[in-house]
Every structure is written in C-alpha cells, then in structure tokens.
Image (cartoon, rainbow, N blue to C red; front, side, top):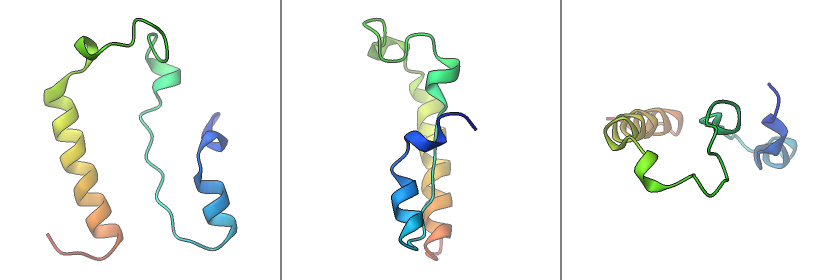
Length: 67
C-alpha cells in the first residue's frame, strides 16, 4: 500500500518488536488532510467513538488482555 513506509513501524519490525499499524488512510480519501480546511467541525464524533472503541478491543486482544 502506498504510504505504509511513512509509519514508524518499520524500525520496530526491523528490531523484532511486535507492532500493530492502524491507519485511517486520510491522505488518500480526505481532501482536507493537512490543509487549513482540516478543522474540528469535519469530525464525525459518533463514528470516531465507535472506531476508537473497536480499536481498543483489537489492541486488548493483540496484547492478550480479556474484555
């Protein structure tokens, strides 16, 4: 995937650390990314909350925590 090398994960992987990369692919789908139009009023807080909850569950599973 283009842009995956922009992550810090490569250096961790090279040293044998487990790493989980999560991306929202913003540069490829969000026209306001890193512009002066990238403002808080564009955030869908309901969806952000659901995604955050889901990612939290994935991370807990990844590190072996229950729940």
